[in-house]
Length: 417
Image (tube, rainbow, N blue to C red):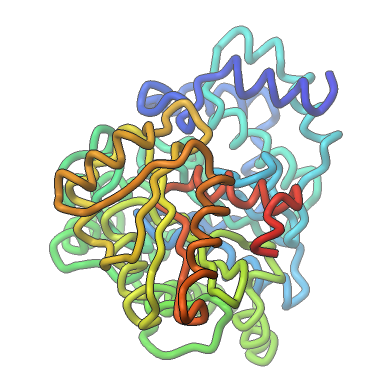
């Protein structure tokens, strides 16, 4: 198969959470264990750091990757979902894996795929573990997909575990209280393995602490402070503090130099090829995108938006299972709100989004496509007296940001670029 045919096979034939939602989530580790055993258990051939959390796990993963890369280590990084290219999920030293590897791996295990019918996520986890083993990484930074206890990545025996934050998300799979969600995230904690905690509220933190104590896992809290970085927002300060604590407790295994650490912190996005987190696409007017999509994440983004003291214009898109009645009130008021449907089966119809905003007393309009919404909003901003006072924010879903970055990669945003 060609690379495109291989992706078609993976996307179309396998249950994929991004496409169909909760029904793709496997509630045990049987398939990933079977896959990795058939591949010689590649996850046992490299050291790893395992990261869970409602928000912040992607940023913390990329921070750690950037720091270790800049200190000369061969660093694997597994994250999800991808935004534009499937291979974003599997990187070594910031570089995505090769198309040839994706093709060859899929061809090799296709008979097993047909036999046990794993999920898309299970395949990608096994693919990442295999790639990191073949490439002989010094350390792999592994981000969970959903939860932790039943996540396919949870067959690792890491040097350290990290839980970045606990908030409401994926309640249909993880539970409808912070305590239940915390217990699922805490499923990554391993016996006598150090655990680093990010900024977590007292009640869910108590749940995690109890599980860690039962496993005799030493607990380390994140560093509080103000750190210079290209990652913006107070929540990124928490993520940096979490990563720094992890670097400290693993210093004997992977020593780092502080001047190289500081340089990496200031260049995380460049070093690790990180996109979609308070990402600036243009400066005049200011155009920002962010993948925040749950209550906790959007609350943090809202604080960032308010802090800019600019006139906000929104282009938003959501997935069908999102509780908009809890999310909409978090957004600061905007000059205009335009809803579009993300280009994914789970995408919420733009008209449904408009109705949700109107039900809560906000005027909103729909657009037939993201490209049209961008052109209309950008033209509107440029007709105002002070376009420099405007901020165009695009977000609400990973998938809408993915659509945006795809247009950018295809040079289809001349009014922004």
